[in-house]
Image (tube, rainbow, N blue to C red):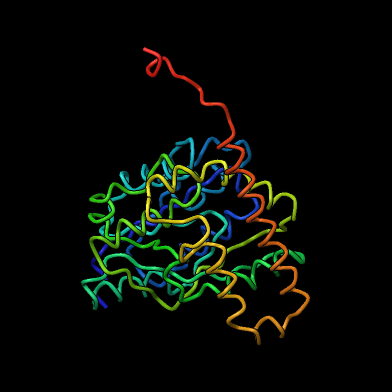
Length: 284
């Protein structure tokens, strides 16, 4: 394998004491070298920066959201390629090697999807694990995380106006310039110990910001897109043996997913019903 290409791995953080150690440890254990590890922290109030300093000297502070953090990290990166992950993720030790091998042998693919597998504690974490298992291999749902840096820069990275859906938005724009490939090794996504009410609250928050995504992607539909509710329910029920093998977990997964869509819809409706605020520029 040609190992001359530097890969910059960018991790965004905010109060991630519980998951950051495992995340960064999985990066430094990668079989591929050379690697550059960059952590971009959003004003953490816990010991997140202290943990990061055990693994890298490339630590920066940036906000207000993860898209701005990611773009800042890429601007600081020296690598030919960049890998963007969250601080609640852990990498199979072959992830970076597989990414570099793919782009070396398939030069037309300058962006890559890395499949994800969820894990965590409690019943709802098992429901999320089951749900994510349906998405492996689904290009409309999985988003790219590994990019040639010059391509990332050319498409201007993540849209910092988006809060939610930014991964799909970037992948859609990248597809206009390159083929998006995929590797076999996994990212393991630590769901922690999710609570039903907290998950719905998060989806309500994303729903309130969803209009920005649809404005930036006018061909997308909240209901009928390939990553929307109808497509996902069809995907779930296209594999009845998977559902029947874990009937209790499957019922919980469907309940949770329905609750998430209801919460997101409520958030979208809340924003649409808000009185329009006239700015000074509009009233001038």
